[in-house]
Length: 336
Image (tube, rainbow, N blue to C red; front, side, top):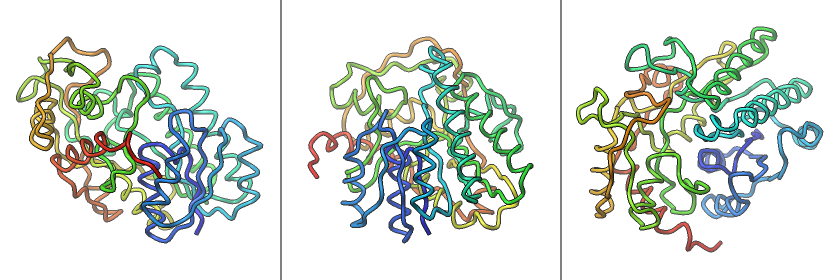
């Protein structure tokens, strides 16, 4: 079975491709390398000992995407491609709506043309907005607090309309919580451009001396220590969630959403403490005012994915921190 992976050289995409190849799937990767580099392909092939096909194209180029489907026998698509920085989306909303939504429309139109109806979409817990209750389950109301989150929610709604219009579609919406960590090979991991937007790569760059200290946004939330609480999930567990969804896609009824999280909420200070334990490095930090658009406490109810996908998050916070630190220490010195 050939699987098309869009955005496959990115953080989550690259880890998912490793799991796909090791499970015996043939993989075709599409990426425009706007937030990644082609050497990730070499690293994936080194980890797995297997080859894959790579196309450097933009999904906004519908003709190029059509040619890929013409040249390959594709049976399912895992769609990661899209801009993902919350702060940037607030500053440049049109960029996010143009790229994330139109690229998805192009992909779905080409899929329909070639009779490919199995789709796994990289969604996000941001579609829940301010949580109406905790833990969050898939029946909770949805909203969005920023343009990035709105693109995810709008795409979910588009895919729901698509599924309703044609019952051949089998679509899994995977709502990620907070992916962290890296592959145990040390060859792939999160590599943000510029100053990190997410907590873990910010911590690792403080630990390595690239940044002076960590700024903790908010110390007055209704949590045990006043800092924000999130559900952190190891990126390999997240990647395995895509593999489980792919293996179950044929028995899905139309479109289904699944939370991929551990079901455990950790505060920022708890993450710092665990990272210090895993790395043996002290993390200087300063608590500053809340950041606009952040929710105070957010964690998943993953029971639906447990039950219907037979998927469980297995790696704990210590392992997440340890693998992130190992990746930070090796990523600039690896030669393929």
